[in-house]
Amino acid sequence: LQQLKSEENIVKAYQSCISKIAIKDRTRKEIYDLITNNFDCDIKAANMIVEKLESRGYIDDYRYAKSSIESMRAALQGERRIVANLKKKGIPYEMIEQILDSKDEDEELQSAIKWANKVKSSIKDCSVAMKKNKLYQKMMIQGYTGDVISKAIEHVSFVEDEISEIDNLRKAAFTIKKKYEKKHSGTILRNNVFRYLFSVGYRTEDIYAVLDEMEWKDE
Image 1 (cartoon, one colour):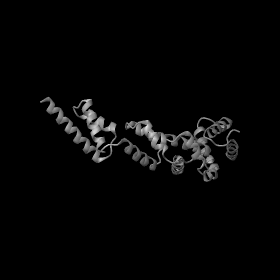
Image 2: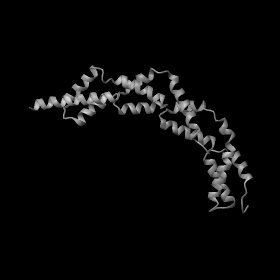
Image 3: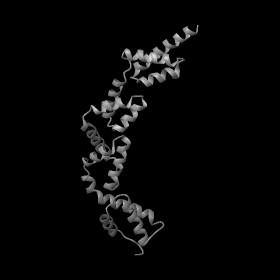
Image 4: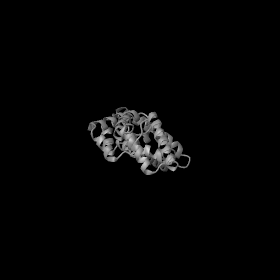
């Protein structure tokens, strides 16, 4: 009776795996976890089911990894994020590296440049230096390596941002002056405004020029 029950569990587990795979592709680890977490099967039985599914081509970690990498690259995700996502799925690091290394070395850089140009316009009302810094941080989160990010940013045009730099500086100076003048005035206020503007990446000579245009009480 116990043997019949065990065999029944194996059949149910196998059929459940087939149903899950029919919906979307799964890794070896995902299938193994599905079996051990939802069915009363021992390790030997779970491994037997996984190997049977592999032998019939229902699961293939290499195929899964290759397809996932193509999809994540199309979504402009960086290599670090791709590796992290696949490792969570149980794909061996060596397999991930093998697939990544088979790609054109320039592909990662082109992906980074495309993503940087896409995101750059969303970073507004700040200095060019601060925009580059924020873009760098966003690209790190997206999973690109520091070396790739630095090269990509060199290929991104900031000409329009440079042109509007002074206007953005004036807006920032006015806003922060209005905030600080509730507590300060005169030289102290001017110095605090200067320090803030310098801290967010504006050039010293530009800050002085804009501050000289503004009115300061008690001077």
